[in-house]
Length: 201
Image (cartoon, rainbow, N blue to C red; front, top):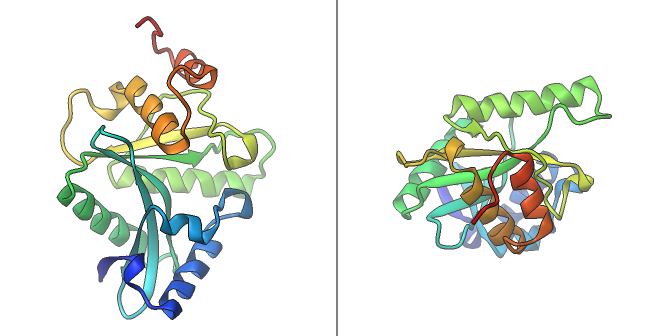
């Protein structure tokens, strides 16, 4: 298996990747497939596409934001393979941390099946070394049908402070460089306040 840029694939291979993407995410969580290719779209390949990871650099932080992460066939360990290849690629490119959001299993109104799916997703990332950040009120301006989400992060190299203690920088970086929301925006300040981060600057 290898990780390759989506831009190097044939049209038929890209069609297969698009199907993996559509199968992996509910409509309210999807951007257009062409939109993904404008970011860093990486595909796990064997004799065919097996998984997709889409990333965006978070300004000059040295971190990347994982927009999408999915594999085509569940239960084969492909998610772990994709994660391992991604870690190698990002470390090689000089990135020290990966940050991303996940749907909240405690969200009001979801059924038990959806809750289990969300909890399993979080546990999958934890097994791979990621941490669930103590961030409250994180509300991406796009996707998630307007519901708050949770933030996770994994440090590729040891950092001081570690991701779980670096909340302000992570929250500001995600809002600013993933969504174009200024650090002074009320939604950013609200998220920091709800997360117990002092706003005195």
